[in-house]
Each structure stands twice: as structure tokens, then as C-alpha cells.
Length: 94
Image (cartoon, rainbow, N blue to C red):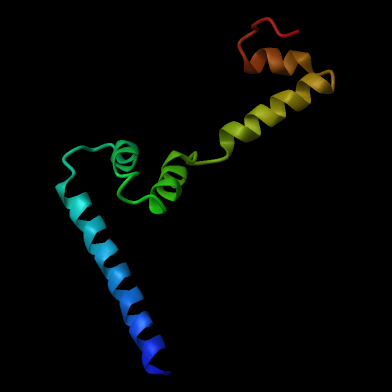
């Protein structure tokens, strides 16, 4: 490894360390309890990390809801409207 690549590697590491310290400081100083709100406020400070964090925070905890929607849609398209009516409490389903 030559001197230039060692220097740029050290600079890159220092930059990452500074960002981690900045992130840790921001988290410690945040007085709220809403992670999504934290990341909305920190978007300008952490422009690369914020979108990823927001996606992870807002992801559903399970796939059960999506699976139920697909199941009901399948029931509606396969002529099983009675089962769909029971699922949605006999509401009007075309």
C-alpha cells in the first residue's frame, strides 16, 4: 500500500468515524420517542442514511395483512363472494 492510498484510507475512516459520532450525539440529544419523526428531522444531517432508516421503520411488522388482502381478492375473483362477505362483515362487495 503506497502512502497516498494509506492517507485516503485514513481520511475515509476518519470521515466515517465523525459521522458515527455525529449520529450517536444526535440520538442521545433527541428527546422525543418517535423514530420516524427523528429521521424526518435528521434528513438534512444524514441524507444517505435517513431514507433507509425511514423505509425500515415504516415497514410492516408482518406480511399477514398483505396475505389476507390477496386471499380476499382471490376469493372475489374465483366466485367465493360469500367468504369475502364474511371477512368484511357482510359489507357491500360488488
